[in-house]
Image 1 (cartoon, rainbow over the protein chains, first blue to last red):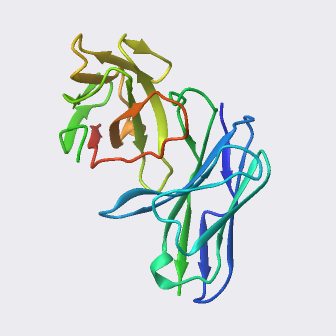
Image 2: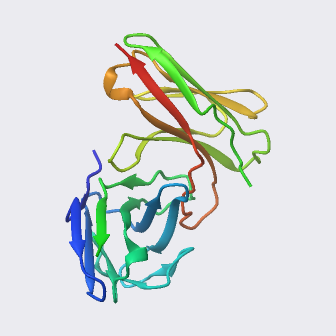
Length: 114
Length: 112
């Protein structure tokens, strides 16, 4: 079974802090993704990566950056956290294929910015 | 621009088969039908996907009509743990990493 592990289930941080969310997958997947999920807005893609050190912006990259130094690990960074970044953050991974490879998700990190 | 249409909610008795419909009348020839579910406060879980043929795995079966304009996800023996929101989406089969977009899905409630 694919295992995608997010470092924290719940996290509380203060406005202006630099926040790191970590994600690790154990299936040697090339693609990794960061989403946020908000009531009424659904799932929105922040960034994705198809290889080590490669990254592509998703639909809402502003205020975020990412790092992929190793194939199994994809980090999301909130450079200076703001209250509008309070959300559920979801990491996913998939094989690099013809686009018909399913994404597998972690359990999410519920982040609150005070 | 919604590509799929699902009923907002459904009930099913525990132990019975749950049949969840999805309409995707504008699907193109190179788009797959995917099903995910999300149990409250957890991440989405991949269930199954297909292109033209019916598919079955350890979790569910996927029946796609011959014209590919609709599909049905079947959970053969529903349990209380199958209570979740089920999302049907269509995805292009070309290269690249597609971000997923879920619609409102179907809230399936399994009744004891």
